[in-house]
Length: 400
Image 1: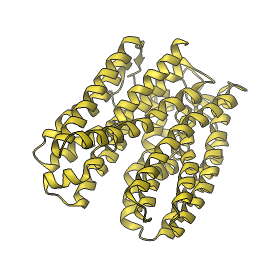
Image 2: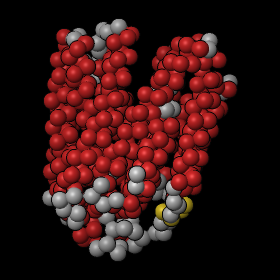
Image 3: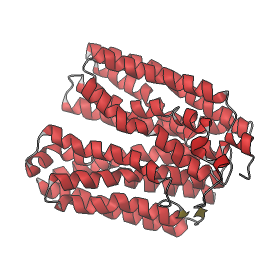
């Protein structure tokens, strides 16, 4: 296998190991509630902290924290997930656990950092490579869920939490060590640029940054919203969760491959961007149809229909591979690493807003589903608007 594709697979393993932390603690909810003497509502704070951490990670991307040595940056990001994973089973207070979960959210910075690397290794193949890497988020979710299930079956009470968390932390560093042996280092630029090439002052950054906002709104809340509004057995709920994770992982790869096939026809900056817009628009259109099916399933409490709807709606993740290849395709080489974090910060503001809106302010299924349908439409409208804009690389040239 070609070396750069081995790099893609190793990156995917790193992402999967890191994102195994995403839902693992939730799978021990009963044990955690008993251990700390907290309420179910307080249990939810840890996931809120994690999601806010995802947002803050991109805010820090504008600093020197994740710049300089690429390999050092990846090791630092993994440590933000692995060290809390080692500490959580021994935290005496629930507040301490919540704080550590916030730092674990920084694992999402891997996505922007790997985008820089993929931009250097590929051109037309970028969406496909990125789709494989992004699928690691959901393979990681499946891995974390199954590790928690295994630990619960083999160890009792808090011992199961300790084993699962310690094993997953060791796995993160073992995968990082393997990755480190085969990956070439490079420098992510730290330098400041003139005001003329400040990504935050470019209208394109803001318009296109928000094209992924609706997708993340749906990705981070639709599964939970659906499960809160149906009456299925525990086994059926588990199957729905697994279906959503597998669906998003597969759609990430499938739509990434479609992006590659469209990109190879025209590898100019404008040609690559046209492919990006096409893939994201198609993903949102099919997502719209999938949400209608999910709505019907919720109304009828129909498990089979819910499985179908969730499997189709998982295509919303097909927007991800295209979105995360935008910076190398549309910004000058010297500033696209900074642009990756800027686009990530704008889009991931959904993480800070969506859970509070959907689970605090929305009380009816109809209202919730109309919001999801509106998000799919908003995504398409923003993509159409961005397609009419001049790209930063067209305005500044590639040497900005």
